[in-house]
Length: 348
Image (tube, rainbow, N blue to C red; front, top):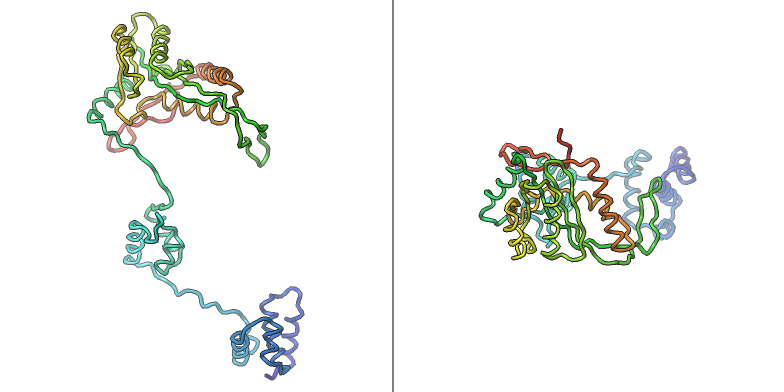
């Protein structure tokens, strides 16, 4: 191989450059060794390459000289998204992969179809498909669902005059967890951190009655979860209301709500009618929204040194909440006239 003076100077500059690309320096070194008459065995040993590498750059330099010493990636041919190809992507997305996995990723589906993963992502985005997401649902199997739901929603939308409506439920097995390691507080760029290990002091049950008209909550804790504690809580609700006031109580289908003792209490208090939610429909009970709130605000991140400490913090939160209680609005949420609860907001 013969080099001109200009070519030799340029190749030597690339080899000795401290700022140039390493792959360009390697190609220049290969051509300089060829120009010196070095054998391919020697070049392979010095550069750590194969014969195909030497042959490729020797042929390219012979054909194009210095202008040919750049990488040429073959890449992927341009793919046009036709309606037929888009339909194929959507069909395969719905059918799922055949390798035992549950859903496609953009890269796996693109590889299976010989397409760019970005094309798959654009098709998914256009049609609102998110195979990586999963949502769960629970359908009520109560044959009397519509009547029961209409009865309860009617109490929310058109409550009876001179009567109180309470949503009653219990949050059972609240654990009094005490952290064995110190809690590391919130700091800039770092969230509050709790140790992994904890000590369990026992559990409590929290009974709560949500007043749908005012948003106030009547609460009571109990160490056991039986119909006796439930009746005691119903007695508290009756005692906190004016005498001769009708008290409508909304309950779920828990077995502790349907014992003989509870039936006897209700017979002795005819002004306390009970409205039972359909099966698997606790979302109709407003107090479930309030339980989610106290779970976020107190229980999930709380540190409790004893069951008494847990009780004290739960009741303190209820007293604080009742200083500015908030009710729940119901509204028609879609064209099918399905009534759904919004978040807890103040009703003016």
